[in-house]
Length: 79
Image 1 (cartoon, rainbow, N blue to C red):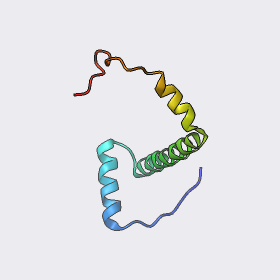
Image 2 (cartoon, rainbow, N blue to C red):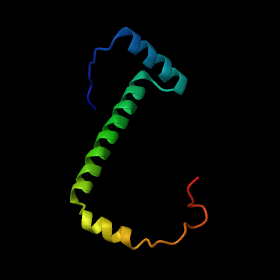
Image 3 (cartoon, one colour):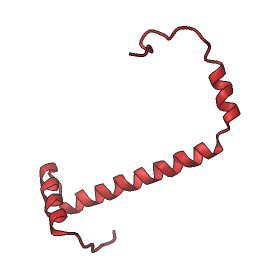
């Protein structure tokens, strides 16, 4: 594991301490979890952008064209 020193405004540090206590975890665990969640979010966006870049409009329209013009199935209706 790596130790990391960060500087936080006092108000942010206090709020993190309160939230960590409410969750029953240490400040270290709280910050590590928050960093992991942010990392997962960024990585998900990167993945989705890469997948979207491989998509072709023609393929999308072909799949959409197979949907048909019938009425929606039960539960699929618009409100």
